[in-house]
Length: 263
Image (cartoon, rainbow, N blue to C red; front, side, top):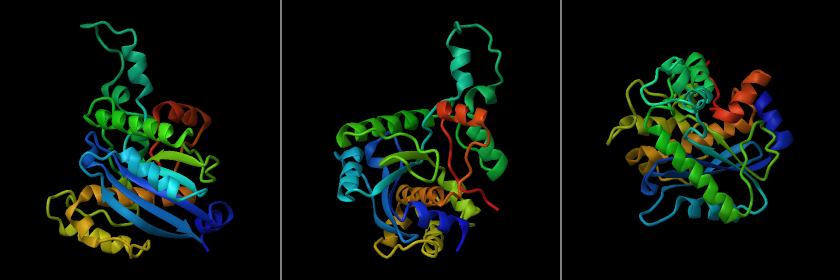
């Protein structure tokens, strides 16, 4: 038994994990529901949000259906902004110079960490369109809080001390850590890479309830499933988090990408 499975058996024998591939438009949001029982991860449902449907409604219904089982929500979206960005702009006047380097201003500590450890550059939430996705993700968490009548704090350890908690994940790094990230993009309209990824994922989790075609035709659904896998790594204590008190304090402001690192 691995260290991760020992930890899981001791703390989170039964857990629900909801993967959300976030987007600014609700009908672009990918959702996946996974369950962990006796250390085994199974995908129960995977789908897109339908037209005129609310992602929050779908997710809240899934959570309610699980009863008293702890739930971890794994979102493919930044959940915070760089501290340096706020510090630089709070007193800035139009036309004035900036004293902070662009990378330091627009990237979070976790973005540098992911680049260093995994060789992948996450999008700059301070400069890229991903900022709108981050806004939508935070609004989704707020809607879920209202619908479920409970707070949804960020999780910082595999023990999942809260009934419902959330983490930020990065599907590409999770795939890379499992040696399932293809050399060419899997985001194309018709992608044999997605079929290959699905076959690889089927060796890591139970996907018998899933329609493989859904994943082959829709990368958003695939990313949602990979978000579930990232959440599974988190509750197995396999993801790398902040390493110092200072880094943890910064992460509480900026957010942190939880991912098992490629070996």
